[in-house]
Length: 115
Length: 113
Image (cartoon, rainbow over all chains, first blue to last red; front, side, top):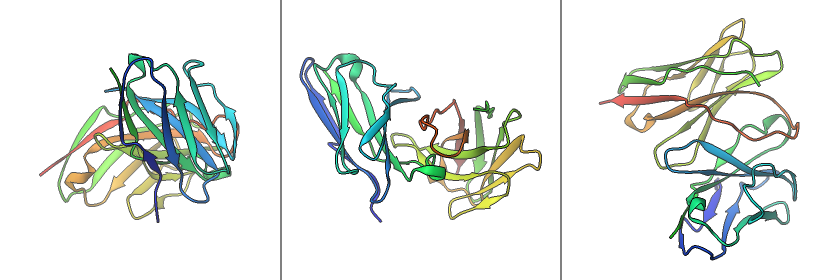
């Protein structure tokens, strides 16, 4: 079956511009996560959705970052007024909730480069 | 969540079984052991998890000691595509409002042709 898909795969933007990243989770997965990974670094948690609500936004680094999920499916991560330190691979993952919440299936990521 | 300890790196010959150890001596009774891997330039990949019984799926086997203080991930016939960083994570199962994954440094496994 189809895995988690993300678009675009690569995005180059100028400092100060807004970007929108999209994630299509696996069908039937109620939980959705956004992480980011800077070059050579570990995974950094950003936000978690259960259905359309976000019980954990603790990882969003600043108010320039926001995310939404509609219809319990597709999610978008928006970064406003991008900065060079926002350059990273943005990864989306999804899972069933409940006892399988840690079986997270990751998409291929969006590589964001802010120039 | 219990802390895990893994070797920094390991080599394994292609075609042989790769055995990756993980120590989690402070694991509590309701914590599961999860294994993920990350191949270079790809997102992390879920491999397997278990509570106390040994588990096997199409990717790997997970052997958990009887006292649950350590476990071993076994890739039965390693191929070059198994070269990756492997992460052992211990988490309480279920929705408790803290569902994020936190990866440590993991074990860098290199499969040698």
